[in-house]
Length: 235
Image 1 (cartoon, rainbow, N blue to C red):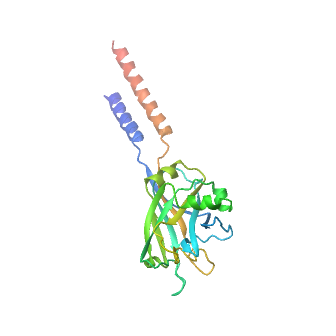
Image 2: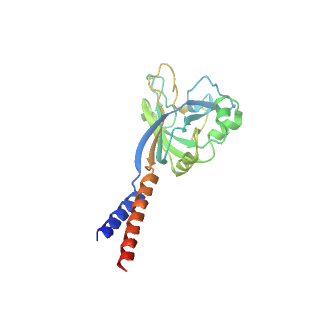
Image 3: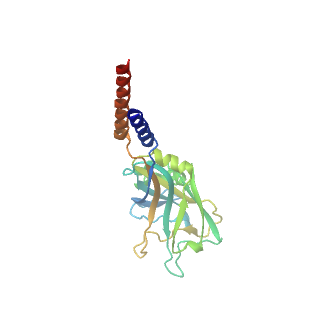
C-alpha cells in the first residue's frame, strides 16, 4: 500500500511539473533610435524627431528597438509615443481635419540603412507600406499626451521571431491636400521634457522544468522497481 501511495504521489508531482504555469512579466523597452524620412528620401541621422505626416512635404517615421535582452513568448505589445504640446501655437498634432489615422508597419529595409540615411526614397516607401501592425486615430486631443498603439497578431508573430534590432514604420494614411497635417511634431526637441518612445511587452516565460521532470521520473522508477521486487519475492 505504501508503494502504491508513493507511485500516486510521484505521478501527481510529475503531472504538476508538466503542467507548470507560465509566469508573465511586463517589459518596457526604450527606443534606441527614431527619426523620419521625407518623401524626397532624405533623413537627418542627427535628428530623432519622429514627426509623421505633412510638414512642407510628407514625412514617414521609424522607431528602432533592441530585443536582444528578451526571453519568453510575447503575448501583447503596445507602442507608447509622446505627442508634444509646446504652446498654444505649437502643437504635436496639426491638421485641417479633426482626426487622422496613424498606421504602424513592418520595415523590410535593414536598420543600418534606415538609421544611416542610405535608404533613400525606397526607405520612405517602406516605412508606410507592407504588413500593417496597428492603427490609431489621432487628434488635437492627443496634444500633450502619450499616444498608445496596440499592436496586432502580425506584429506579435514578427516580434517573437526577431532577435536583436527591430524597426517599426509610421505613416498617416488619411492625408489630403498640401496643408500641414501631422502628429508628433517637435518630438525629441530639447525644449520638450517628455521623450517617451517605448515598446511595452507582456512576456510569458516558463520555469525550466527539466530538473524537476528528471527528479519525478527517478522517483517513479524507484517506486516501480520496489513494486516489482515485492511481487517477485511473493512468488
